[in-house]
Image 1 (cartoon, rainbow, N blue to C red):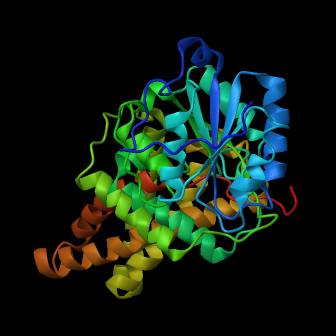
Image 2 (image 1 turned 180 degrees about the vertical axis):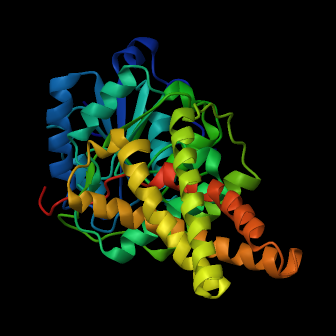
Amino acid sequence: MSNLLLSPPPGPLEVPIASPGADSSTAAEVVFSLIIPTYKESGNVAKIVAQLTQLLDNFIPDRYELILVDDDSPDLTWQVAQSLTDKYPQLHVMRRQGERGLSSAVIRGWQVARGKILGVIDADLQHPPEILLKLLSSTLDGADLAVASRHVEGGGVSDWSVVRRLLSRGAQVLGLLVCPAVVGRVSDPMSGYFMVRRSAIAHHRLSPIGYKILLEVIGRGEIKDIAEVGYVFQERESGDSKVTWKQYVEYIGHLIRLRSQGRISRIRQKWPMRRFIRYGTVGFSGVIVDMALLYLLYQGVGLGLTTSKIIAAEAAILSNFFWNDIWTFADMVRRQTGWSNRFKRLLKFNTICISGLVLNVLLLQVFFNVIFGQNLPYLANLITILLVAVWNFWLNLKLSWRVTAVEQGR
């Protein structure tokens, strides 16, 4: 194989049906093209290429390619990778000098790729390579998109601070509010480890912002069937993290643009009606608890309306969690046994419901003091409960009862 560098394609970020200049017989031989975007990753390149090659040689020998796209790293990552091409003939290297950014690097790699399935993996070894085969198997079995997720069974993070966990979850909640038709389709919309069928995104103009290209793929591609595979996000072995506040700002901008300007493809989702009915039944029992305690504390004990409401609502939250845990989400609970996991679920459920409680209290004050003129406190309470129920169901459906942490060293 020639060790010449690949030329970065010019023009818009649009993936062709087949690689320009590739003959049909060659294109048919390559099933899978994996893009490895890099910037200052010279210390990781040899290891990640060796691991990926070993896995794919055993799974689809001679039917894959690795395309490393480097943004002209000052540590000469592209040069280190180029030196490996004689040893690894499936490896190709692209050096970009006039364009920067992880998302655009991935798309430029896809534009020159020959595979019918296109993937992306980080070079920093935070994405475990062994998960690649599960993703590829799901795509070969018919999925249009296969995503490695930290928020499904078998997923988690190895050593994240509380702040970073909150930022990640907060970004997901924000995404559900701004662009639910896109973000709500996967459990881990911030994932940068996935693969997609070329036919699902070909000839769609992509315009990602920052690092989160998955949102663009879901929002603008023709994505019908999605598979998710759990993985544990690892800490870096070498190099510096590239996660900064700028990435979160770009994420917000991307959501807004997808919502207001970009074309979002039609989404077909199956509504979990049975689970929704169970959740609603549990919620109704919580209404009884809430209303009964509110009456007891407000009329019987003589506490203020706001104080009575807070206590009654928290009691209802605990009751709802218990019944949801043993009934509504029982299938998920069976895969997350133990008191530690139950406590984590309770914290997440309570956090989501408390956010709804804040909204509930504010709405109650509006109805009680403004609309009803301090009359009909129980009707005001019932109306606020119904309004906030939609908020709580949607967030709990997407965020609760998921494992997001693992033991150190797992």
